[in-house]
Image (tube, rainbow, N blue to C red; front, side, top):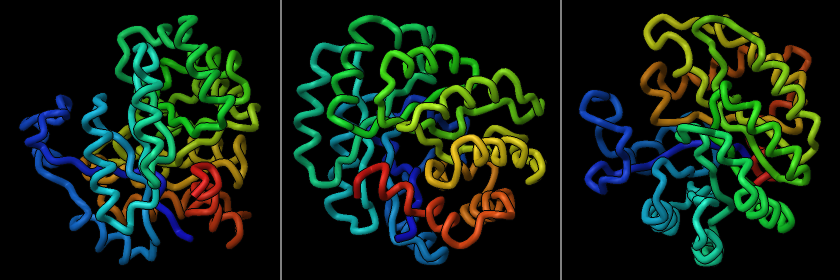
Length: 276
């Protein structure tokens, strides 16, 4: 099974997506299965993991409704705010849907990421970890100190770092991103998505060489069994089309990784992580 482990759908008129404005014309339109399905077929992908793109339970309900009608959606990653008392009620409702596979924490959007270390927040995540619920972590590299501390407090977490934690590709800096990711990789339940990278570089003038140092270090740290391909479509269109995203990753993976390792990256690991 070949899987795109990270993509989005949205309908602008819903009003959930405050970050998508007319100032971003590439993204300021509807993106739905009719747009992505031809690309999945072109690149011989069996389906995708549909990930929330707005911090509302209503948007999670919306993408679950899309999944009901779309065979290519293999799983849905919804949204929960662990800082709210009703997060468990929403989770119990979502989990009744056969394609709900987990939830995402949008740490990236928090003005102060230390909030994730609050006692109630940690306790809530410990509860989900005890049930082995897959959790996506959307973070930027500057937040990794707090993310690492959170994982230390929830060491059994089945988690995946989205977009390799958005390192500073434009400047080429590796530290302290590398040190934090190395520590995170020591926890056996932690995975990393090789996704969302092109938008961290120069949107107009990026080169594969800009990303290779980051991809190859993640491959070394997490190994072939704990990394997964994600297109981050349609957000990737800010800098690259679907084929360019795939080619970037194919070109950047370790040369020693053969057919088995690459089959894990392009599907096997996503299938295992999300329990498809």
